[in-house]
Length: 300
Image 1 (cartoon, one colour):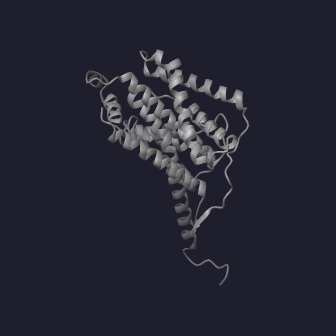
Image 2 (cartoon, rainbow, N blue to C red):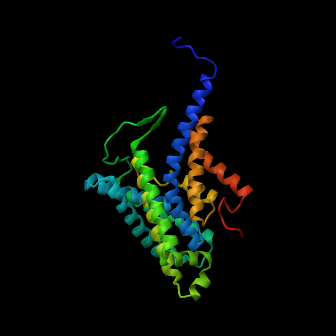
Image 3 (tube, rainbow, N blue to C red):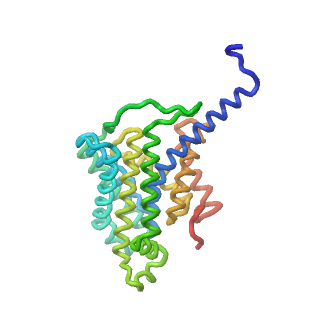
């Protein structure tokens, strides 16, 4: 009977592939949600889409690389450096280039943020070159759970992403500063009348948002490799996650990240891998058509 396939074995193979892609999608979506939350936080407070988040993902990726590959720190510790670097560069670049334009339209600010992104990526390329670089992490075999396979680094990345998001959710819901930031996002004028400084909350939102982008960039690099365009290649999926979840909604960005991660992986059932990026475009079009404010976005 060896080598003979009884009825239904093809469907079992398809089911195994479906479950494997679902697992991969959940892992990827958890990582994707981190920079998506950063993007949506900045939008919630400042009301424009800051596309320079792609460059700040690269900043975090290379900061983590220096701490890990050059300084010899464990990757888990270097993630903290990626957050700090992303936050510091984010606050500095906003103060120098975007803050003076706050009185202009959201479109003007979004375009200016693209210029900032190009400058950041070019600066990284000037110092590090354009060749891919790998983190100093050991090569390990995938873990096998029945017919499912998962990489140890995938699991670690998902755990780090989950911890970062949990800390943020606690900060926003429990601390006084977090509640003040939410108040500014809901109604800046009312918050100002209550003694909350909108400018201070804006700086904090940018710092946290770009810090999360830095973490996201490093997590992406840990699973592959890094170069100055590591954030640029992920920005469509990050933006799609934020839009699908609802721009301005932090829980929505988490839901959107998982949705985009699953959609991109499950698309491999019918499409070649080169078409994965098209899923982000399709998700944006579908959500904006059926629910313009996203899955968890506030009503107009």
